[in-house]
Amino acid sequence: MTPESSLSSTEADTEAGFGEIRAGNLGVRIAETAAEVDAAQALRFRVFYEEMGAHPDASTLAARRDRDAFDAVADHLLVLDHDIGNGPEAVVGTYRLIRRSAAAKLGRFYSADEYDITPLVNLPGQILELGRSCVHANYRTRGSLQLLWRGIAAYIYKHEVVVMFGCASLPGTDPDALAPQLTYLHANHLAPAALRPRALPNRYVAMDRLDPAGLDTRAVLNELPPLVKGYLRLGGFVGEGAVLDRQFNTTDVCVVVKTDLLTDKYHKHYERKRGGPGQGDERSGE
Image (tube, rainbow, N blue to C red; front, side, top):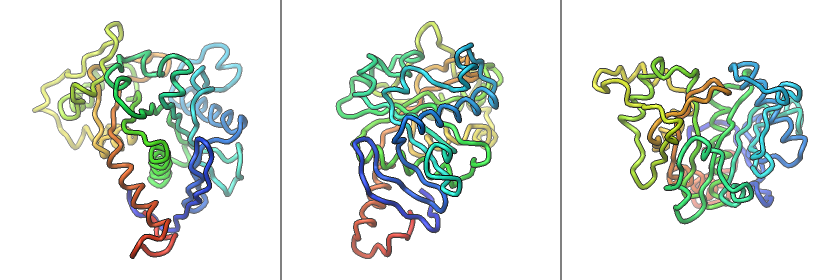
């Protein structure tokens, strides 16, 4: 993770969370109340439906909330602007986190609606599904995204997660318009067979749509969403096949990330917090 100034964290613990990590006026932690989860759902509605053109059903439109059955079993990672407040009113970013034990309460992971994730479910150890990531338009900065990643790193470190995965979205539902990005991901970042989800047969959209030799790699990378590029920087892979999500007006790819790199960075940061040799003071940053 890139160094930032004026970083501090508290190590207070909860059953699911890791305390709060601060960067200036912003903090990241797990939601602690139903009102904070509701604020995350309201933010998701504004970003997904009002801004990105998702298509709400009647109940979603009436509630002005993006919510489903998975919210009740998930942990909700929040970015808070403490210049605004310390509770629901301060929520400016969110990420939904579903561990194996949480998914078991519903009998499936959310991604299973789009992908055969059997290779991941069969892995030993803890796995984590990430989804519903969004940040308020006024906070879409490098610092906010880094703070979300620091929160995820703390969470997977606490829960000893070995692999994380989830459906990452490209804008729009025209795979031909997204052909350069889909081709690049398929040609350069396809998951090994032992870790490779595959789009369900009735939803499968081929990703290898162009000759990869003809791609302008720099242009393709510029077009990839920041979140997808973040996964790739951590050594992430993609599954076989894309899926059109017409409700959310997106084309989804299934991303898989072994957590070694992320947990190693957090471990080094955590050891500095514990006063490891030659590490400086607690506000030294990452």
